[in-house]
Image (cartoon, rainbow over all chains, first blue to last red; front, side, top):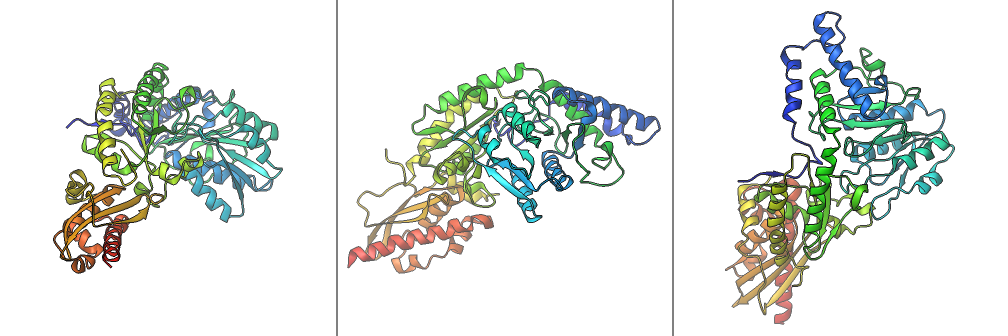
Length: 384
Length: 122
């Protein structure tokens, strides 16, 4: 059976070139970067070369990049560590209602530790309004964390506008850029960002490796203690093969032609799916949407069932339906955009990659209308 | 996550659809939670002669609806009322624990349809 992977928002295929770059670091250049012998030096050299590549990609200095185990760790590190390091200044944190679960659950934990968290509303396309951020900041605010590209709706927040407000109030600004990294501009200086969460496995790099950009001069103490790796900020023997793979993935992904390619496929997909009756697109259209994200709600039918039939046809997708969630609650992100629980339950997310082909999109467009039709036929909420 | 049997009933539900001029209809569930089942019944001499369902819901909900109809068809209404969620789960082989509520919904929708039938008979 044909297999089509349209769940690149969950994770991506490792680029074979990335695998090639990583291989020597498993069994030839396998030293510990802290060791002072030849093996260690090779690892150290690879570590610093990789750090420079990632720093350059976001207009940062190499010493501002701290490698971590991935997006979840970077987000935990940024929020918890900034909160505790700066609690003499205040105990107020601001995030949006559309953050990833690892930000939300970190905030819930911080609330139990005595911090106050404001969860900003978003508009119907998922954007945080900079004016509302401006109003929410108090003299107790120490940190603002706003997701860059949303994993569900594809909404790309205006970091520049949000960052300048944080700068005006002298408040640290963090963004979770796991989905947006290399897919739209990310520039520490132009957008005035103090901390950025990055990861590799959404951009055809390996799982288990990420980074946190920390602007020089930021007051932050280590969260993970040990042998003082990563400038003393994140201890633990560096995952050299992962780091090398991460840097190679970034090198390849920074080519802007990939954005243009994915945008073209995405727009064709969106346009054609919207021709099915009673379908809505969740999130914005155009350049303020992640180039690889499409998210729809199909009236009268449930998302997991659509995904189940797509899976029968070899197509991998995801949904914000309560049925597929461990909590049995519809997606809080979609509901923050004003969708009803019914609309959130009938959502389907299709996320592309630079390896997605025109033929694959055509195949989806060939089978999806029939699936929607047959599910509507057995839906108690659908009248022909 | 799902057993072969669940997927079989999900892919080709034999009882999906509507009965024209049914003797009773029963609906259970809430679209907010993601599952709604509507059951159509044809009853003769206290025996369920025909049964169909329309379900808004996930893979497990559709499979449960179909299995419930399979179990109920041909039974007297008294016996059909004794179908338990576990009977549906058994029929499907295995149900992920988080989806157990789908089998409960199946029996509730059937119960509602039978109640409506009895009310209309009075």
